[in-house]
Image (cartoon, rainbow over all chains, first blue to last red; front, top):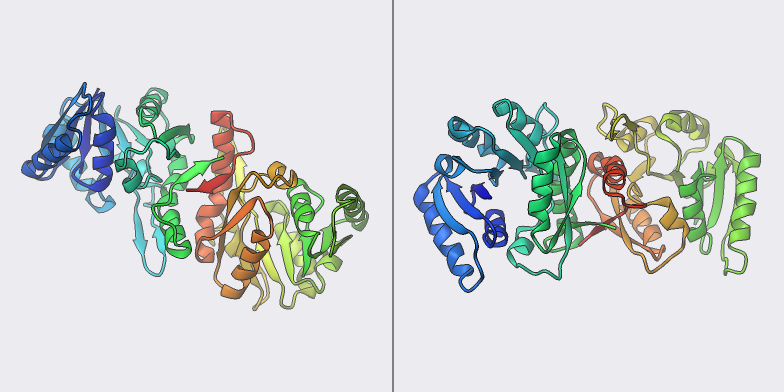
Length: 217
Length: 217
């Protein structure tokens, strides 16, 4: 499968690359192609010696997204609109994964959803007809995803309105040893799963927890 | 401590009684005193043979709340306004715990918060000045709370604006062996913790989980 990780030069992007590059063709996207190329080279170095059926290449965001089966938006909320404008010309039938969370910090972290109810629903409304959005990965600490430590297992809550797209994301998640995919219902349920990110940040700050994630017992 | 459990004849009320009666004076409240008295007798039977520093008595809701240190509203959202009207004459300095969640079910469970943002904030606005509300226990499956099984440990996310009241609820939670209290921030953060109840119901329904609870890793 060809997976485009837009904004893939950041921590959480790195986590996905390291976990998926064994089985998939990874296209790291960035606003600047040379930054994405440098990240790709660095990730290839990290995985040297691991068995690789896929590959890791770096591009500008539009080139990364072109022809991909799956696009994951590892981009801060404030840049989403710009990134979607950039890739819109090459969108045809990709599945778009949104781990995006609009939030602000004053004394505490606070979820600040758009009028649509969630970032995932806003992104759905920005995309052409026929492009399916799946909301996922809001509760995964990047440090844990990058560690490739299979003894740690936390849960990924996955929301979406299209069964096939959701199943693709469930299968991709299941390939990552430290994660368990759970179906969390329709895209509208992303209002809760997105708000878990500021909740976990507050829990970390107030209870001295490091990189908290969620497990459903 | 004198703890009034209003609506304490239900499943989740029973869980609190069984866990707290060893150390506290429990006042079960119900709309009908005889129903509360019958529940109290049944719970005393369940705990026969356990060491009890406290006691368990049943009353109508107003009598149960009078003179209590802590009131817990184990009452469905739709009845909250009526119960608060009933107990308002005897409120002076009690701490009020809200595990209340406004939600509806169509195809999925959906969180339906009031205009204040959360049931906890709405309840705060209904109460006299000086009565502090703490939101907690939205993610505890009653079956697990009643089982008194200390090998199972899940987390309680506690929100409130008053430090002392929140600490009282943290301490009460810490007394229950199967629970770990976590400070989840201000009362406004109850918008997320309340929405976890319908989220857990959806996760149970869609992933064949029984009595799901949350653990922060």
